[in-house]
View 1 (cartoon, rainbow, N blue to C red):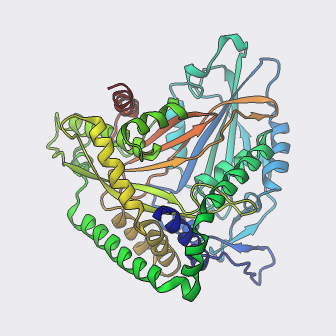
View 2: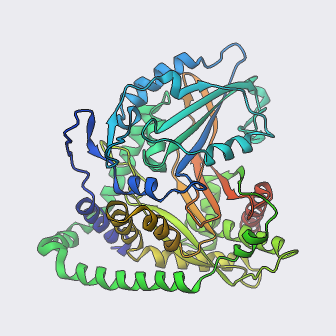
View 3: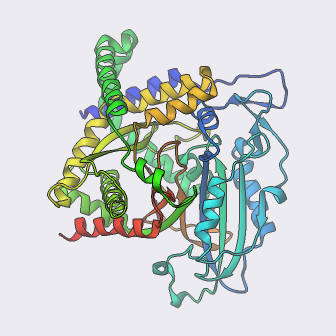
Length: 498
């Protein structure tokens, strides 16, 4: 019986104790019964002017010239499929008590608007502006801007997905801005998936995956029954205390001994504060899984993502070292969000924020042997995942969101990242191609909001069996996100072919 399965199920029980999200009623009749989750509140209190907790993503569709997507039809479909199904989408944060959401009658004409269609040259800057613009959560938690233009003109559909044989001449792009307090990446994938024509099929697929995981955990029933008896058993308590002490000590050492090698770059940069944006398709999900399994039988797609990103970080540091006194370390810290439900929203559960996180020290070049380095990275991440880091980070976030003053909450997020150079998130997307009102969704990608003090955010996501990634970085650290993306793909090609 794998230890990982036992820990996963134990986390589930512990999480329910820590954040049961009770149906708590307020004297104000407008306030809905469900509280804002601790992580959701933490995202509001820890955000800064330079780092608002905004999730931005776009969905691009292809269609015939004489069959456009009518925004009025989309508003009606969005209301029926998303707003009426997910209470939070017709709510905002209560101004008098930010522990609660408040139901409101939102105007879809204000939340879903039409705009000028972007070009491939200005689309990155549009995303950057969306990521940096704050959102008043007491007025709205989400907004969508839609536009149409010639197929491929915005750069939102990579050339590899444009097939001349389909005779599709137009594209529609929907740009979403969502405050992190509304939900995490998994919740957004579920909610926006409901807006598709195949929404019910997507929900059925997730339910099957959830049942599959629960069936996989049935082998642990006997041991878990003994763990849960006598308050989850003395054995689990001893393990949790020892493992937590070990994890906290390691994180404390990272905090006091690690330095962000980009600090001198931030000091000497000629650029003003801004964002550098890029997105790229990589390969099929099956191909990338096969690549990592050939190198390490216990390797995961997440390990591969960390290897690709850390290689690009190293190349970026070498680029800065040409004209700046940059010291390139042997290891850098990278933060990884961890969904406490294993990347799946259980059937019937409300969208929200159920994420913790872990920090790992990742090596740079090992004798210029990328496969050897990937094996080391895989072992490091697997060892970190065996500790209670994710649940500990969740507990700390809950404490700071509920009890600490705002300045301490902001300080804690910056310090707990242990001078990480990057944050990398993997989001399970829709397993098959979908449609909006009969129009094919060709490509979609989301952008990672940057935590204070972390200069690079990478989001890896799947759609219809393919993997893509996006980059949202401090422009002073990554002046050219396209070049950073090239370095990431360069490392993948080396791993896939050498």
